[in-house]
Image 1 (cartoon, rainbow, N blue to C red):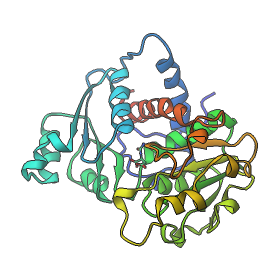
Image 2: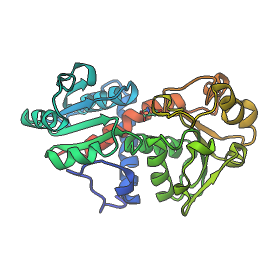
Image 3: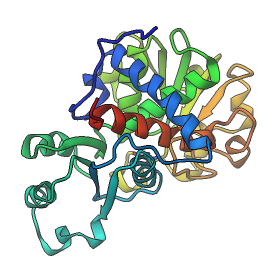
Length: 312
Ligand code: NCD
């Protein structure tokens, strides 16, 4: 039986998980399960989005997110074009508004956008009609990453509600943390944050979220640890200790891992700073789902494109 059949994302802009209901999150996770079977099969081409056109407008660096949105669109039969910062007319001084209107004029159905400034996806949604999917706007939100984190956890643990998750590292600059916090608390998870005080905003202290100064307190008896990348490109002077100090006090290594549950699931959105926030042995240990997250990213992005764009 179709549960939660009331949830429907058709035509919706995907800006942040703060705007999602638990039913909508469940709908994406359910659809991603079906999509994952396609990725694992021999015939990775569906007709679901035949006749639809998608532009990936990536104005900030990306490997995983851009490639997985591109493949997701192609596996569903859409035409997909990717534009990145260094090859776009933005380098000639064109405004974002004009770039968006130019893309719209070509008849596209969706624009997947990544930008270094917070609020860009919301702005794009006000300017143009195609569905806007936020692939990361500054430190604000990264909804498809949070959905793939939830999907990976659910696949590994069989549930979400009641699990204890520790999100550790550079919370202040992390759009992944922000989207995870909204998504995870909506799904009934218990969220613990830890990192250096300067990178740990207290405004996250709300129902379902606890902030710790000591990493040991956050990861103790955790079911899941999500290790964030230190966003070296977004740091201001004075916020970040030395790399050696960070690795010593906050880095996740085998020894710290033993404080968590034995079957703790390790996540990292990538790219990783090895030896800084995560040790090599943790990346490759059997609890690590970091590699799986990448495949799940394609499945979740297929689900998002299908749910927002497919004609029923
Ligand atoms: C994240 C991002 O760009 O926000 N990476 C990703 O999408 N896989 C996290 C990061 O850059 O640290």
